[in-house]
Amino acid sequence: MFLGVDCGTQGTKVLVLDTGNGTVLGEGSAPHSLISDHNGRREQDVQQWLSALQQATREALAQSGVSGQQILGIGVSGQQHGLVLLDAQGEVLRPAKLWCDTESAPENQRLLDYLGGAQGSLQRLGLVIAPGYTVSKLLWTKEQYPQLFERIDKVLLPHDYLNYWLTGRCCTEFGDASGTGYFDVRTRQWDLPLLAHIEPGGQLAKALPEVLPAREAVGVLRPEIARLLDLNPEALVSSGGGDNMMGAIGTGNIQPGLITMSLGSSGTVYAYADEARVSEHESVATFCSSSGGWLPLICTMNLTNATTAIRELLALDVAGFNETVAQAPIGAE
Image 1 (cartoon, rainbow, N blue to C red):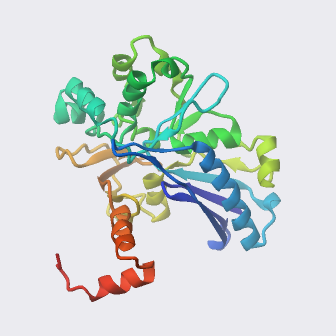
Image 2: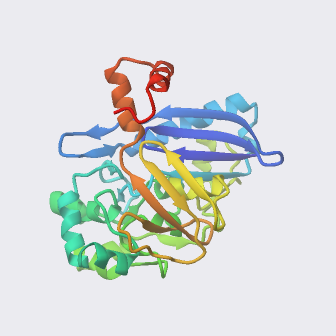
């Protein structure tokens, strides 16, 4: 029996899976809320992630009828690009700045200019950095919270942070790391000179997590977390990955010739490649996959957020909204 965890923008979902026959035995979920304003700020209190993980785990286990002591392994999928900062004691310094946060757009443009524009970013990193990526959030934090910035000891992504909370180990893997904007997707190495451009003293380089091969386990649960979640203390926590990378594995997109479309808070379309084929088109981000290859991907930032806003304006529930949409002619404006 295994536990699958997805920490998304709108909430956390957990499922209990019997890998012997591929059956989902139980599911649980709990919502997250956003900290937002008119400047494009989109942040979350990471304590919400932890509370949601606990609630969703309890629900999934209860629905499955499976004892937590039967769980052999845990895999965590997380929303990409978000910035989680820890101090030397492992405490979170401020709310996580999310992928949908555009407050750092001016900082992103300055970094893009430093890289030589879109084509310079493509040549150096294998993708064009955008405001949603992690790198501009670091520069924004340095300029908006200089004293807090000096206390940074670890720079993590959302799924990295959950793995850290579960195991006590700070690490990441190639797939999620490739969405930071300071990772060379061709060489699978951190771009340390780019981080030095933001902070010349080397603090950020020291704060980076180790990068694990996708098939390497992070470790077992911390004893106190195993007790809190009522899970087998010997359960292995896998390296996990970003939501798109985990979605690729879940849809069998681990060899050339397949395409996956994901329609969530954002919309993504991606394929698998067995080599780093960096596109000349600026809209294609050649991320690393979490299965040993690469994941050329196109993304639109707003998808179901937009449809939800329209549905709420019309005061319709989901079923009513779907019925209304079905009645509209194809191509209706």
